[in-house]
Length: 397
Image (cartoon, rainbow, N blue to C red; front, side):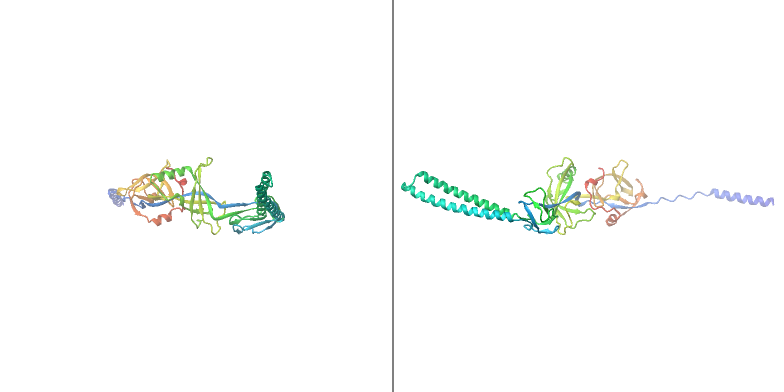
């Protein structure tokens, strides 16, 4: 029994020594992280600025009476389209017709008086030659003729005024456009040149879009145009695209017609004016819109997907780039503006750089990676949708 235990103990001891004599297994080599990269390639890019704006009618006509009287008829449908010269209201013309008749009689009377004065003056001109009358009498008859001629002109002017007043009893629209509600009804008494308008006619096609741009952004734009960073598009005819309040793009593009010449001291902004077609009447005066204004063309723009740009703790823009030997490098960047779903980079990158846009969490600065170029379409699909962005949304530079 004792020998059996000794043999078992000896076997266990030998097994333990054999196990201790084995060397530890070597550690597995670290895996190389696979990342998606975007190759930076400068190209021509149209620079657009998104600015707030409000629509306003191209022409506004406030309809007021030019003569006093009782409104007999309203000859339009509220909200309808009216033509230039269309009759809108009719004021009782009775007193004005009587005034025309009276003025016509005054003209006839003045014409008769003129005829008589002319006869006397011609006769006296002959009699004074034979000394049948005095020179004084001849002068008096000549003066009476001139007086009669002046009286006739006065009577004719009064007749013309009476006819104008009679014509003004039919109130017409000076412009074509959409007419608003009427503030009076038939039977109302109106007075000439009263303060309250009877109605308003608005010309809505085309429509103006008044755009507000900060003076700081305007100075920046002029500086970029001056140093050649941007090429001008021709500001007088720069295209304007409109985005409605609900984010829907407006189907008709307009043009920039006016650029402000002064800065509003209370807001520090300059007003620009664009003209936009409105054939369907979708736009109404006073609507808030976003205007996309093409301000220039960058011939060597470097655009990087937004997901490839990160922020340092100090707030600076940075990107991780695959450098020589597939080593990850951190680059400090200067970004200018957002264009679609990309940032325009002005410094920190060069053509051909590979910016990591996928797999950042799987690597670190100085690590070795296996880069795979990501298709542009895939980058766009994974980025947040952005219509256009102005410099106001530019991250800190």
